[in-house]
Length: 209
Image 1: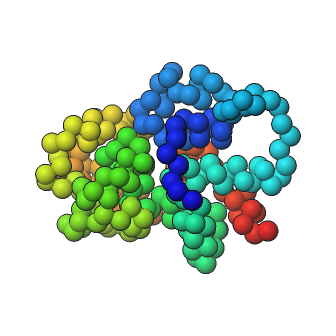
Image 2: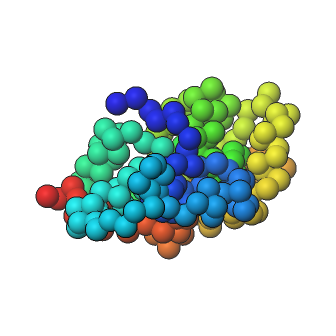
């Protein structure tokens, strides 16, 4: 299935949660969830009874849409998490956070994960001094992510870095704003994955059927 190319605010409304897909707009009163807090479409305001499967499916869709993955990508990521030691749900979120596009967003270089994915593909970022243009690249502690020299004058990068404090930088990464550089200090921890709130156990239950 092709990547979704419609209005991303409809996805937030469908999941009844802010997925922060539109960057700074999500923090203002123009946010679609704030203005129309019901599902999109002709029957969006109807009350419907949701089954147990429906609740699990919606949670999976919420996480998948937050990180901008397609169904096959998300399923492969889940199976990889299931083979790792520890709690499968937490492993899944950790793998998603460690993606290069998500890490670039977390460091504040871009306003959204979708923008980060595009700019990573265009080769704007270096990992340990080497160009990496694969959004799914999994970062490791000790690695350094930096904006290449030619890209440091681009306005969108500077605007994003100037407003990064609005959403904050998690403690597992360290941003050097002046050097356009970020360092991976440790693996992401579950307590910091709070935007939006996830119930990863529902996803584990869904794929365990």
